[in-house]
Image (cartoon, rainbow, N blue to C red; front, side, top):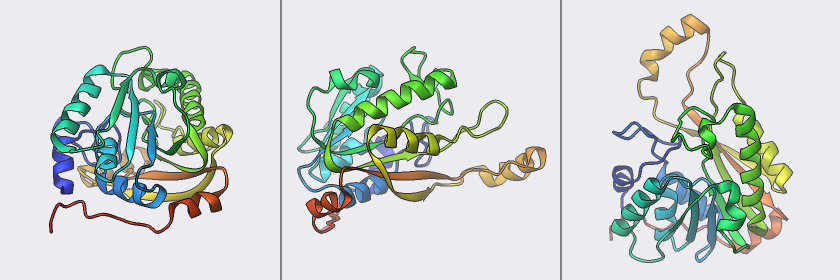
Length: 256
């Protein structure tokens, strides 16, 4: 399977890729592939508390990982399942419809091997008018709900396991950053997952070069073309690493 096939079929409400024709963001399938190769081994179970798109689940399936994601919107889950049915031949991803603030009830099992997610970037994209949708909550309520969800997701992880959170930032109405990466680090550390690595994912600039000059002149605000890929460890990083063995990146192109 090629990356183009993922981009054509899997639309993700997260700013870690380009934009689809529908205007929603596309999660980067190469980032998925690398994250699973670096921090999991074949047969591992993956938990995703913000499973708005299909990419993380589909890539997990192709790499022999067992994925469980929780997503609030039924229509999104149905679209995810339809895309997975067309693409995945075995180890189909599991998507559960519900509020991730209740992930402890919706996903009864514990002992997952990897947490991999991309939360809403505050209100940068609002996905629904559901009161439980944290993307449309006032900022204080967003932070409280976000911390609750992350804590419950971390609790699902076994000890000596990794977690990756892809997060960007957004500005409030006065133009100041919320500092979502910092809020995420604090939430994860408070939940018992220590901050271990950071990478920067540079995303397509799109129309930013056209907009940047005018925006900077008017406000002195720089345009943003990256997200933070934050890695955490629950437990001992040495044991977590030793469990994984050698890094194996399979051929995802389907070519001989």
